[in-house]
Length: 113
Length: 112
Image 1 (cartoon, rainbow over the protein chains, first blue to last red):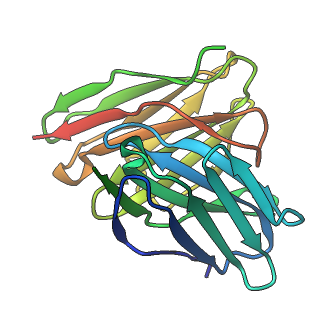
Image 2 (cartoon, rainbow over the protein chains, first blue to last red):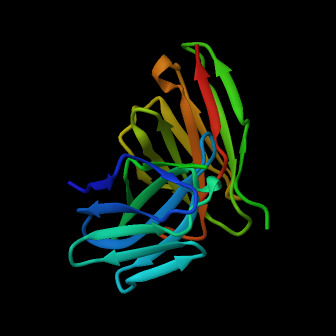
Image 3 (cartoon, rainbow over the protein chains, first blue to last red):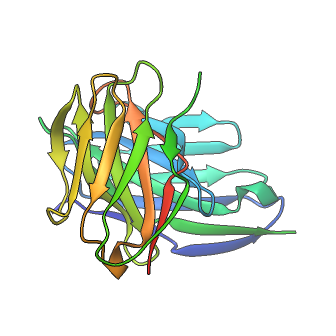
């Protein structure tokens, strides 16, 4: 069964600090992995999308890593800002004839001043 | 380039009624997918349309249906509403199947 597990479930950090969110998946065959940021009550916004051959991808203060061998991904946020407070969702796409997306339950990040 | 537009943003319906939600994808995008998001279940896939054809379907009852028009706009219909259908319904568009999806702001449906 395809699954995506995210950890931690929630996280509180102080403004300016760094943090790392984890995503483990069992989706097969793997196509790509995406990280989304979702503010409360709004639609998710794509941060990065990574394919099998990509190990690292950055988007400003966000850096995603992918280890396709261990089926793990991480999202590192540098110098956090109050506006980083949101849910971060890991989504893995299977390379099948009929596309299947498996969503993680998200990590709720709260950045405090 | 305009983003994904969902209407209405908020909706209140009574149990037993039906509702239709609308999604206009990014210009040029031909794939539209729908998701239900609740606090307890997270994001759950409803269905996906590409070129007016349903290409993939999640595990939702037949009360949930959708369609896509020739201009790629999509509608989602829920009949015989239940209290448990209260959720944020999100639409996402992509240029093709299995390419990056861009989400709309969602329609917040409340069933009373």
